[in-house]
Amino acid sequence: MAINVGTAELNIVVDDQRVRVAAGTTVAAALFNLGIAAFRRSVSGEPRGPVCGMGVCFECRVMIDSRPHQRACLIAVTDGMNIRTASQA
Amino acid sequence: MMTPLAGTDVTLIVADVAVIGAGPAGIAAAVRAAESGLRVVVLDRGLHSGGQIWRHAGGGSIPRVAQHWIAQLARSGAIVIHGTSVVDVQNDGAEFAILADTSGSALRVRANTIVLATGARELFIPFNGWTLPGVMGIGGTQALLKSGASFAGKRVIIAGSGPLMLPVAASLATAGARLVLVAEQAPRSAVTRFAAGLWRAPALVAQAARYRARFLATPYSTGTWVTAAQGSERLESVTVTNGRRTWREAADVLCTGYGLVPNVELARLLGCETRDGAIVVDEQQRTSVANVLAVGEATGIGGAPLSLVEGEIAGLSVSPRSRVSGAFLRKRAALEVAARRMLDAFALREELRALPTTATIVCRCEDVSYGAVRNAACARQAKLYTRAGMGPCQGRTCMPGLEFLLAWQPDTVRPPVEPALVSVLSSEIADNATPSILFNSSVGEAYQ
Image 1 (cartoon, each protein chain N blue to C red):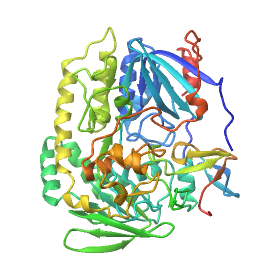
Image 2: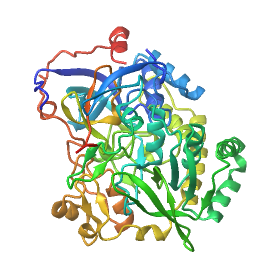
Image 3: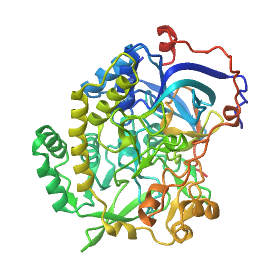
Image 4: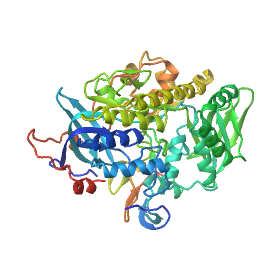
């Protein structure tokens, strides 16, 4: 079933905050729209966010529903999804 | 927290043809092969068929030609599986065994023929600050936009090279971004010569003009490139130069990229010959390895129309009852000439080799600096001594740039070609196992 971006909203949890995001977006787009810059921290602690947008660079990795290292650009947001980023680390 | 080991959770598909990648080339190959009655399975990393060029957020607007092909694929009888990363392919001479990771579960595919339609990724050249959040690929920004990201009010600079910059600039302007600058590194003379050479293709000229009309308020500067980006937790400003003058622009987003690099990792894992970074194919799109074909950008950057023709040729050439007509071959030849002209026009300037400094991070996965790798004799040595290229992306992001900067040759490819759970890598299936997905339409639809 086709979902058009912007026609519906979902409830998700991002870094322990309940937020509403547009249905039909990827996790990366939803986090970008929430103003989150640091999706993850690099091995030396630098903030990192999306680069390639298509699952190649692994820079947009976040924890989704307790599964670490999920590529935010390859996964669609779903209702009740719990996401942890590095924006407050 | 670990995902529970899914030892027995293995899906098996037995097919005649496995197509890897569902962009234009993969779709066309799958459609033509399935139409001839072959059992075709398509494995794709994305959420929807269409690849990067036809990316759409489920039901979003895509060109008519894309709708046509995606609809044909859905009707073709091919099984299409999205959200799937191929991690290994083995060739025992009679059959190929593919291992893929679909959302943490193992998928095994046995097929007699493989069509590699693995597409391309962007070429990045590292510079100070390119690791800051807000610095993204040009295509990467387009992907994020098409996935539902809002750029309204964001100050955006696009700096890199190639014709991809025009549609992305147009999309961003239409989406309400404050487009500050579009900087093409190629000199004005090269871009003008390329545009003049397009007189044979008035549709392309008209399309370029339409894109430009959508961001007329923004300068399109040739012979101009970015040398550094600044910010603390995110991008704040960008340093730009045209070789005579260097200045700084405030920005929220910097889109950068210097053209495209064919994705040849699976081809090289299978032992297919590559040349100048692209898979070598014959007139029937056959690689140097028997029963492995390759189509689209992975065989050389040429755009969606060329990818479609190559996909159709491959799909017909693997079909026992079909024949590739001369018209297809002539169309491919003409499109290849146009592609060659484009690559020549947007050749990279020497100054870009001086972009990274000793402290610039080149390998983003392992945070390895340019100073740590620049004296290595080859990619292999850099990997062994510094871990550059050994992280989750397996060098896909840094190595093409380092090959440009240091004239390295690509290192060998080993499985797994992408990170995967141990439960996926260790999943086993008996030789006489019954396929868990069969070729009938209802099961096929369930996996769309």
